Length: 362
Image 1 (cartoon, rainbow, N blue to C red):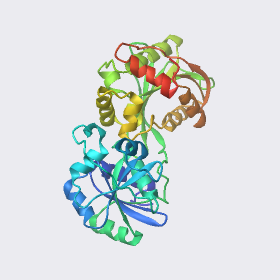
Image 2 (spheres, rainbow, N blue to C red):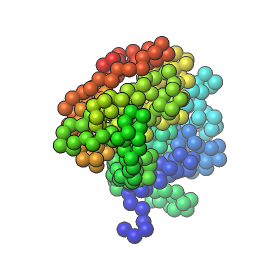
Image 3 (cartoon, rainbow, N blue to C red):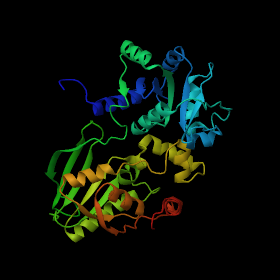
Image 4 (cartoon, rainbow, N blue to C red):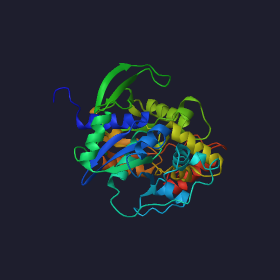
């Protein structure tokens, strides 16, 4: 291989470029495109793309429904970008937290001819980069896209080389004993994905028998709840209660996964909170942003547990879907252990929505 990038490293670089507001080139079956994340796009780069040809702004079907734009492709809409549309229009179309400030953005003209595969791939990359799922797309012939990418030094990502949903290998990077307030027999393992993305952590208490099902909690990072003590969710109380329950049994493991906001990232979670202040529930807010109810990747947790030597778990969760997803990742869930704590007057509606719309057993 030498010093060249592997496909998974190219994928990571493409996500990083989108976060910085740099265009990338995508090449797939029968076509190619230059793409630029709507959230991080600037007027200069919008103009640079526009000079090369007609532009689309790809948004998800959820966001299209909010904007009353026809999503002919079902899960997404390809909105034609008018020649006089500026960067404020792009940002306002992508970001629902700006809907009240920019109420007159439409009507939208959306495309129905041609394939949407590259648009779909570009949206997936934005989601993985924790950006709003909206992207400027300039379709080009593959040969032209390669020339453009080479001239401007852009990352060229060939979609036939690696599926976008490829999970990087989790590598244990460091581990050490960490006495905890719930148990002095604590040990923290740091896992780093092979693509250099966010690290994840395993907190092991005691000496769990690898031959037996391990008491386990998959806890997604929640900066507001875990660190600040936010009353809008039950995450902080669940984190502390899980550690206490594991310590009381004498052995187990808590995985702390950096998948903030059910996988949409902290910035988008704050956008969702702003929408909740306008009267939308947690699921509706996610949909208005263009996301699914839950964007987390539970393969990460399954890979870490396997790396630690566990094959069966007693999973601490109120979410039956999490049990099914872990089973689907090859980890046998032999028992679901309820974890019902943290209800307050501030999160009553949030928890009721999780029960009614996401199936949580509360």
